[in-house]
Length: 116
Length: 111
Image (cartoon, rainbow over all chains, first blue to last red; front, side, top):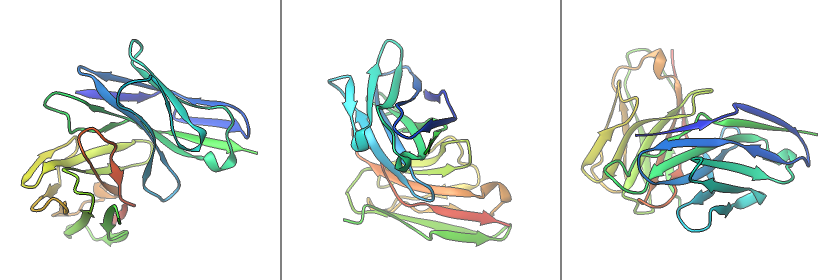
């Protein structure tokens, strides 16, 4: 079984400031890792994903994340946020082998609020 | 391509009523999922399917049923609606090693 912990439920920042949203996971097998964004009253959209290869992954809207296997983390970063980045962000993991390789598990989400 | 389509978008049910949430995808994905989203709780997996004719329970299956007769469709059935089933429901689909694509959600209120 796997689990995902998003360490901050809410992150308020000012416009143009950098931001880091933290995600730690637990799994007995190797995993794929994802970050999704949810704007109000909408579904989830993929921001970026780690499947293999380079541990630094770049996504849409200027976001990036770094996979750290030893620390079982996949933190999301953006060097300068905009008002339009205000949304809820979800970290998710899916095993890439084994009998449970269909289960996509989500964290509880981090609400990013960008203030002017 | 439409992606993942969910209907209806909104529904109000009375306690004890039943309904089916529809989900269809046109990407030929083998995996499909139903999640419910409650404030501050993230997404909880209700049921999933790895292909036509194969379904299994997720974390919170009680009060729900699913079927998967075709690759495209994965309806979620609520037999006896309860207030605890008030939630936003999301359907998603994927291949094994790719991200899941989500529908726009169904907002269900049970009164």
